Structures are given as C-alpha cells and as structure tokens.
Length: 257
Image (cartoon, rainbow, N blue to C red; front, side, top):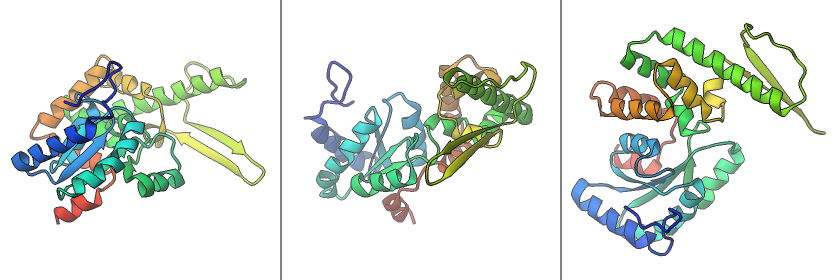
C-alpha cells in the first residue's frame, strides 16, 4: 500500500523508496522481473487485468494517467540498478498515433489499443465470453448492446448540436456519420454497430452492457469480471481476449521467450 496524502494522491516524496522496497520484496518472493504502473487503485479492474496478463510483473495502480506518466521515468533509474524493468500503461482515450508514439519515446509509457479499459472488458470478444459464462445468447445480447449504444450516441449528439433530423422511437439506428472539414481536408467518421463497442469513449458503455447481460449496474459487471478471472475455465479465455487490446511489453516478452 503506497502512502497517500489527505486528497488520496500518492505521496510524491516517498513513492520511489516505497516502490523500490515493494520491488525488492516481490523479486525475492515471487520472482518478479519488473514493475508495471497503471491507472486506478488497489481494487480497480485495471490492476486485475494487468496482473492476469503480466504475472511476472508487479502491477502497481497509482491513480490517474498523469501520475503514471510522471512516475515511470523517475523509477527507471533506481530500479535499473536492481536489474528490474519499469513499464507504464494508460488508457488511450483520444490520443492520436503521434501523441502515443511521443508518450512512449519520451516517458516509456504505453497505451491500450482501445479508448478505455471499459471498452476492453465490453468488447464483442469479451462480451462473448461473458455470455458463455452466464449462459446467454451472445448474438441477441450483442445486437441489443449495439442498438442501445448507437441510440445513446445519437441522443448525445442531438443534445449537443442543433440537429433537426427526426428519428422515430421505434426506428433502429444502423450508423452515424460524423464529418469535420478543414481547409486542407475533410474527415468523415462512420460509427456503426461493428465499431461502436471499440470506439465509444463514454463509460456509460458499462451500464448498458451490464443491463444487457442481466446485471445491475457498473459495479456488478466489474465484479463479474473479477469472478471470471478467478475461474480456471474462463480466466484463460478472458486473458486471450484482453491481450489483443493491450500492447506487448518488449522486455517482458524477451524474458519469456
């Protein structure tokens, strides 16, 4: 447990020594080869997923993405002397490819391949495993989720913009075309049922998916994922899915060849 101030933030002055001690203890007891800093706290879904994906790394949630970005470079020097690697992963959010590359090159921090960790655990591939676990019809659940998300996104656009396009309540929205024009180019983004679970950057996605699989609220869905990660049958299935949306950590891969 890291020392935090009265606002719940990690104590900046003591974090290096605390994490170094944690690394030394884990290296001797569990043969960890490095540390992975991520977002969230000790009870977050982030920590559960990354601990499952990278069992040879000591996963330490440090709060927000800015804390991960700030801490990773500072830890590298001290832990490299102990022969340990230091990594960082944050949610991609709306970062461009150029920003992602700069973040890795300047701070050594990776990003997920989807906007939020919520997109990963609600991806069609993850949802299929959840439906298998709960003995639900995957095709029906997926269609329901996609329809609700497209409808929700449409409502948000109507509220934010002066759009006077009428869509009847019973009509099913199949796709949304969002365009932006500059002096140099015109960009049109198509959001449809095949892409919305991967690209929708709104954590309401958890509530919609939770309801569709018969659970009550965001926390219930998180708890279901926690339980599945403890299940010997479904744990490897989830790990296989999650690994496709999380970047490889080069030193970790080399160590496990």
